[in-house]
Amino acid sequence: NTGETLEKIYLASYCKFRYLTWDVPQETIVAKSSQNKLTAVEQRAGRQQPGLLYLAVFKILPLSLMGMLEINKNIFGNSATDATIAHGMLIVTHSVGLVKLYSFQWIMDQFMEQRLDLGQTCNWSSMAGVVGDFPFGIPCNIKITDTPPLLFEVSCLENSFQIGGYPWHYIITRNKKKDKGTYYIYSLNNNVLANNGIQDMKCCSLESDWIYFHPDTSSRIIHVGPNKINVLKLKEVEKNSQQYQIEEDFVIVAKRETKVNRLVTVTASGRIVKNRFEQLDDDPEQETFKVVDYEDELDLLSVVAVTQTDADGRAHIDLYSNENGKLLKSIRLMESWDVTYNHEVYFDRDTMIHIEQKPSR
Image (tube, rainbow, N blue to C red):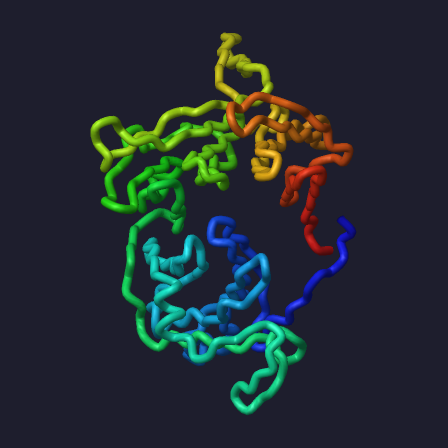
């Protein structure tokens, strides 16, 4: 209610942390460092950089340290490009389009050198300090020395892999450029494609649509396009417990007019040629969906819709029932919305936060 700092943790001096994700089902927070990059001089000298990044993992409520680990290319392969932890699994992505999953619990059990608690006085590598305090920070207490057992791997385009639902399913775009914009929904248990599990909005737009598992516990999927939001549900096929199907739960449609633009060309002979073309789905002069968020305590979907008027963009936040998609309230943002900047909008009970990221001058 006050914005007061309740607790402060110093992570480390040996790397810089830039990303923070909250895994709600597992009640964990993961802080990820920026990736270790070689300078141009080091690259020309043929130097290798096996360390890719660090992950600091915390349990919440109350806040406690699970561990700090390094993702090393000597362990996970030179093609490893990124990593995160979600749903209790270490997810490592590779430049060749592979996504590999490992059990994080198994990794902790096998490779944790010492259990550390926040606020604990600790001796580590001939240094003494308090875990989580400056300048000691959090030592890397999970040293992975061998490749963990592989739980699952899949090939996908641009590493676009998501996992969720119950029972677990995953969403990918197949690793072919012609499949960009087409999403496939498979069972994680048997790799069987769900009935109606190919979702393609066939958008004619500059920005692509996006899809993800609903953050509530309903096993639904949200598919967001420029002018339409499909909320889909995962349902067991009758008389076949091993097969699931995707059904439409409800649809939210942008408020816009359908226009057909006409271009008139007069040839040298005076003949009039009329060309017809449909407008883009994300035409800036038409209402376009930019952000979709879920507020769990109020059980509402918040949708940011933007329309470009003259030089400025105007945005409003619509609140929909998470149960049936009924529009409950619309709130106009007083500030303009510049579509050339990155925007984030967060909704938490009675508070809305709009973050606009302007380029550094």
